[in-house]
Amino acid sequence: MSITELSDILNGYFSWNKSRIECFATMLISLIKVRTVNLTEIACGFSSPAKQDSRYTRIKRF
Image 1 (cartoon, rainbow, N blue to C red):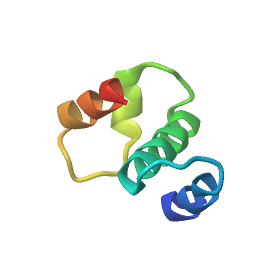
Image 2: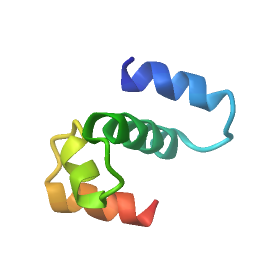
Image 3: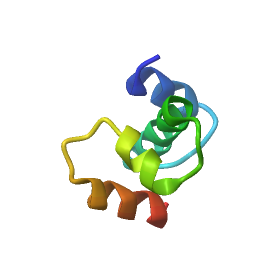
Image 4: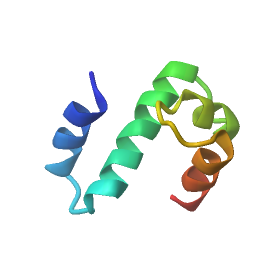
C-alpha cells in the first residue's frame, strides 16, 4: 500500500489537512517497516528526501 492510498483512506476518517494526513500515513507505514516505536528508527523508515533529524523533529511535533 502506498502513502497516497493510505492517505485517501485516512482522509475519510479524519478531517485533518493534507500534510498532517500524509505525515500520519507515512508514520504508520514506517511503524510497520521497522516494527518498533522508537522515534529515531521510525524517522529512518520515512521515505523522504529530508534529513533524518528533520524527519525526527516532525514526528516529535506530531
